[in-house]
Image (cartoon, rainbow over all chains, first blue to last red; front, side):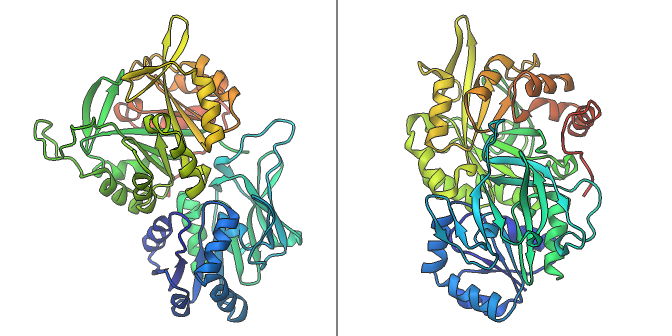
Length: 203
Length: 266
C-alpha cells in the first residue's frame, strides 16, 4: 500500500486517482500513524516551501517521515514542492530548513539574459540518466508537465537522475538510496507520468 | 526546451458543453462526461473548463436542451479528474476562496478567475498564498475598438476603463501565475487570434500568457505563437467541429518545426 501524505498542501486527489488507475492501492495518510500501515510513501505538495515545512512540523508528519524513511528505509517519492522539501534549505521567503535527506539547496531558476518566464509552466522533455529507477521502460517522447519557479540544486551531482532544459539544465528528478523526487507532476503527465508512478510503486 | 501548449477550452452551460460566439450565442454540443473518452484520445497538453452559466440561470433539469446536463461543475470535475491524467483548469462563476477550495480539493490543478479577480482583487493574492501562484490563472477579456482595446468583465457585459496591459501587470503583482487572454470580438469568429493585443500583453508581463479567441483553422495557431508570443494557444470550437482536430493541429505544427508535444498514445 502507498501512503499519500495529506497535510493541507494542495491537490492529493489527482495522485490517488492516478495510483488507482494503475491498480495500486493509495492510502490517504491524514495522521502520522497512518504511515505505519504503508510500505512506501508519496509526499506531494504545491505552494510555498516555508508554509509546507511548518505544516509538516505542526501535524507531526516531519518526525513520522524521518522515522519511516530514514530509520525504516521505506521508499519515498516527493512530487513538485514535495521533492524540494527533500533538500536541506529552501530559499523562498528567506532561508528555511527542509527535511534534509538530499544534500542541497532550493533556489529560484535563474531568469538569465533572455528574461525567462517564471513559473516554468508546461511540458518539457526529460534528459534521463541511464539506470534511473524511476524511468525504466519509458520510450519515445519523455515530456512531463512542470509548474515551478524553484529547483533543487543538489550538492552531489550524482543525485540528479533527470534534467530539463529551461534556460539551462534544471533538476527534474532525483534519486538517493530510498529517496526519490520528481519536480514534474507524474499524476498529470499522461503516459510517461503514469509509468514513473508505476515504477516507484514497484521499486 | 519547454513546449508550446495547445489547449482545448470547453465551455459549460447548465452542465453541458456549448459552443460560444461573441460571448452571446451558445449552441449545445454535448455532455462533458460522455466526451471524456474523446478527451483522452486527444492526449491534450491541458484542459480548461469554463462554466459560463449565467447567474440565476442554473438549472440542471432544463429539458429544452434535450440533453441532460452532467450535474454541477464540481461533480463534473470529480469525474473528469478520475479519468484524465493531464493538467485541469476550472473556472467561471468563482466568487470566493471557498469556491476555489472546492475546485482544488476535487481535482483541479488551477483555477481561472476573471470578473471576481477584478471586483475583488485581494482574491488573487489569497489564492496564490494558499495554493501557490501556479494555481492562479487570471482571465482577461478584451474587445477591439477604434482606439485600441477595451477590457470587459462580467462575461463581456461590463466595459471597464482599465488599460488591459496595466491590469495584466497588476494581476501579475497580485499573484497571478498565468494570464488567459480572450478576445470577445474574435470569439467564435474563425478570423484568427488578435495577435496585436496578445503580443502586447505577453511582452508586458513575465508570466505565461494563454491566447484564446478566434481560431478557425489549423493555420491560426502559428500567428499566436510567432506574432503573439503566447506561451500557450487555446481554442474551443475548432476542436469540437473538426474530426481529429487536436491531433491534426499538433501534427501540423510539429511538421513545421514547432516545439509541441507530439500526441503519442498512452
